[in-house]
Image 1 (cartoon, rainbow, N blue to C red):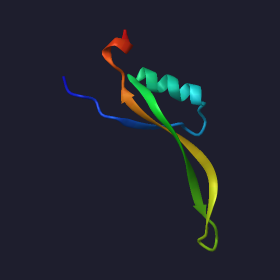
Image 2 (cartoon, rainbow, N blue to C red; image 1 turned 180 degrees about the vertical axis):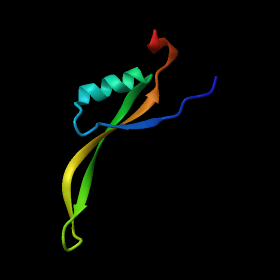
Image 3 (cartoon, one colour; image 1 turned 90 degrees about the vertical axis):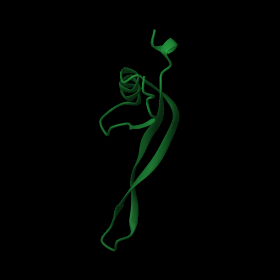
Image 4 (cartoon, rainbow, N blue to C red; image 1 turned 135 degrees about the vertical axis):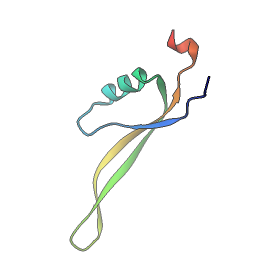
Length: 68
């Protein structure tokens, strides 16, 4: 059986954290780390400004015992 890889899953713009965690669980993964990364835009002078924070989960595959 091939080993699954780690994945990164972002919370979509119109999605709750709980919905994202349910989606991760349905894919057969479990979250290990939560990160918040800033999303920047550029103004008229090409200066960056913050738009919002994006939540990203680092996920590992569930163990077979966790799936049961």
